[in-house]
Image (tube, rainbow, N blue to C red; front, side, top):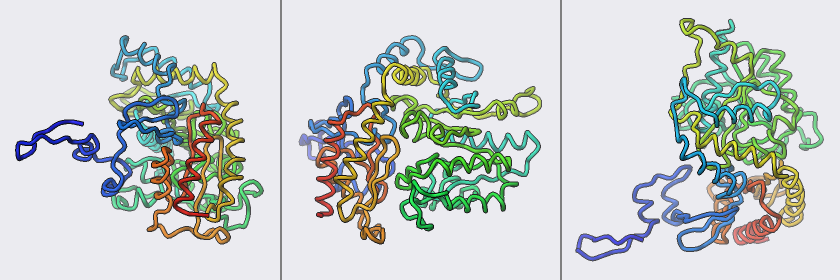
Length: 460
């Protein structure tokens, strides 16, 4: 609260919420919604819990947009940043370097898919995608294939919100308005295992839907620089999970046609899918890979574009040859972010994070299947690793969606907030994407509150 003098000379108390709305334009929101649901001003956080300025607690089961890997205010990560801040806070990364960045590059080289050896630092996920696209484009120019100027992507894909990233996304919510600004890309119909047009199921198919990719490659491979995909999980499409076989077939097709494969692991990396990277589950290696979010456990903005030696060597020449990758960000390689990322890797090496998460994932799948799937409007429980989601449908038998104008998923999100649960919706899909070290007791609390919110919006 803050006291101010109004026009009549009287003192008035203005809330932090009101002061926020006076100046802040929040992301991914229609600001008019804030008239009914003002911003929740967080005072402090610990573990999976957020505490607002009024003392109310919220269980953050979405890891604050998927990046909070080990809970808020993790002491190991916090201490690493504190130790670094008095040594070096930032330095230009052109022609300068520092030990945290070098150590981080070495740590990444030890865990990324085989063949990825070079690491280009940026400061956010969209920037990493932009760098990957530019690398792929310039690589072909410098290796004698300048006709390869286009990019392929999957329908309902999402890779960020800069102009280049939007150009290789297929979500109208983000891209439709800006189409006149976007470059032309080749969009391939993506797998939709919940509403499979072939009548198959996710775990018992031969990826018949891959025929769309085969046709696109037959028609456009010679003019295509790269295809970018979210491996195994299309997040913004509604947490769509697809088979490892699809990714394996895509890797083979890229090898046969000379199209580079870009794996966008910004959302799926660092244990989110049950393996360190989703590509590992499919046992494939991309030509380029982008990582962010969990890279620093949600502490500081940072991203990395990972590349193979073959791509790196196409840029290696005398400056006069004009082959350098002239792409930079002011905060690239920030030492504080590197320190946080190194702490993340130390936690993975010294604690049983992934085995424990696997146990909890199996437990959560059963609980959701038993307690949410019987609801007449829950069409499917889908999951990969600790990521779990349930889709709300108007008709369970036909899988008919609700009228989008009803905003059913958003209403469940609002009710969940009232119960002290940060449960985000993507349309009418509600998802859990918690910190990897969340306990079963905390998951039980989240599930109980989610179920209560669901029943208030859609009584069974």
